[in-house]
Amino acid sequence: MKTLLLAIVLGATRLHAQPEGIWQGYDGEWRHVSEQLVALAEATPPDKFSWRPAAGVRSMSEVYMHIAIANFGLLSVTGPKMPADITSPNLENSVTSKPEVIDWLKRSLDAVKTARAALKPEDLQRKVKIHGTDATVDGIYLRIIVHANEHMGQLVAYARMNGIVPPWSKTSAG
Image (cartoon, rainbow, N blue to C red; front, side):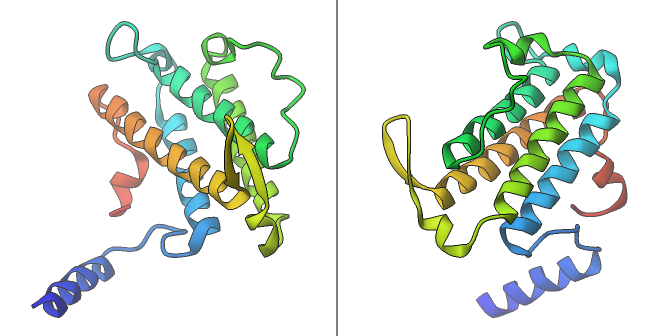
């Protein structure tokens, strides 16, 4: 029965074009979530970047900036330096325009991609400290991708609450 169920599920996935990057390891999954984050940001009207579901909850621009700042911050634990233009602790709240937010987002996504591509397999097991806890470089990269996907879900919900259809939902099962 399990085999039949698995065959049905896998067969159904073949009926739809698979999104780029799926099933292709960390780099493919990073490419996938990066493309979706940028596509959703670009599909969002500028006036919706200030929208928030309730008082005290991050706005759309704040979620995107949170992702960007976290990418740079977590990446810095593994070695690369924080960008010199991160000069304010309030960047998440002060960068709000669509073009600026997308620029920060793209820069952070590219920084993760570039830094990860430069690693050798043994580098992933290097020990690092984060918030007083022992971790590995591989563990930090896993946290980066999980964090990006977590907030992707949040942003999809925000978008749909505003009548915005994620671009990939219009064209595939991704």
